[in-house]
Image 1 (cartoon, one colour):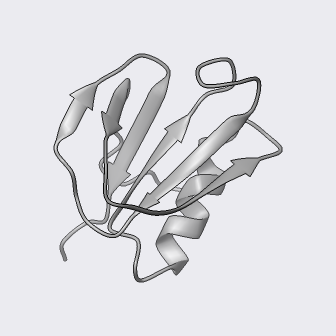
Image 2 (cartoon, one colour; image 1 turned 60 degrees about the vertical axis):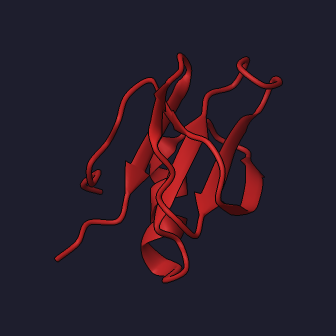
Image 3 (cartoon, helix red, strand yellow; image 1 turned 90 degrees about the horizontal axis):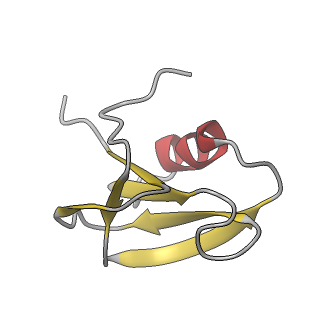
Length: 80
C-alpha cells in the first residue's frame, strides 16, 4: 500500500478519537484503517517498545501539528 505523506519519527499529538493495539508491528495496518474511515484525518503509529511492548495506532479527527519523536510515524489524509 502506498503511504501518503509518511512522516518518520513524527508524532501528531492530540485530536485522537480512537486508538488500538495491533498484533503485528505493521504501519500498513494503521494506514488501512485510516484510509477507510472518513473521520480519520491523520494517524500516528507507535512502534513496540516505545509506550509498551505492543504497537499502537492513534486515529485523529483533526490534523495536529507535527512533533519530532523517535519511534513514532504519522501520516495525514491527502487533500485531493
